[in-house]
Amino acid sequence: MPTLSRRRTWPPTHGALYVPAPGGGGGASSNTWNPLDAYPYLTFSNVNKTITKHTGSFFAATRALDSASSGKYYWEITIDILSGTGPHGYGIANAAASLSAYAGQDNGMVGWAEDGNIFYNNGFISTIQGYVQGNTICLAWDAGNKKIWFRTNGGNWNNAAIGSQDPASNIGGTNLATLDAGPYFALATLNALGDAATVNFGATAFAQTMPSGFTRWP
Image (cartoon, rainbow, N blue to C red):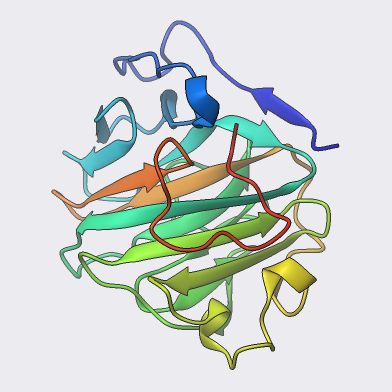
């Protein structure tokens, strides 16, 4: 069974306003971004599902409330505003990963940037499709096998031929076998002022089809 935890701290580390998320009634996810686990250059709205970069001249990241050490999870992020002076970065991170670095700068996290580059352990590991303002990006994270898949809108996973990248069958994926120990959280990193993104961990219907065998965050 998946191992889940919810990580909250008080008082807020960076003076952020904490807005409690609604309960998960009716099977909807109550997971959101965590303003108590974020760099202070971000603001939170839409019941902590939307983040906006409001100040600062470098990266600002946040982790989600819920973490997992095992299991298979799917979520989507809508790119609300993207100035093109990123990079943005979306992926997963453990609790020790830096919140003032680009996504993938250390060995506790991996990030997918808008130009399609994937970064992990302070290095570039591959290039897949990118994303632009208005896109919805999809992430599938297999914590047990330490693999992650990305796609833009309803495109192919990791921009590969159908069948060569398939999270439902554990085919392909970005291999994170040496990732530092978890538990792991969904991660979002913004850079340019005014950029914004909204996550859906399963509080509402997904825009795309979740892979077989995966689940929304709780």
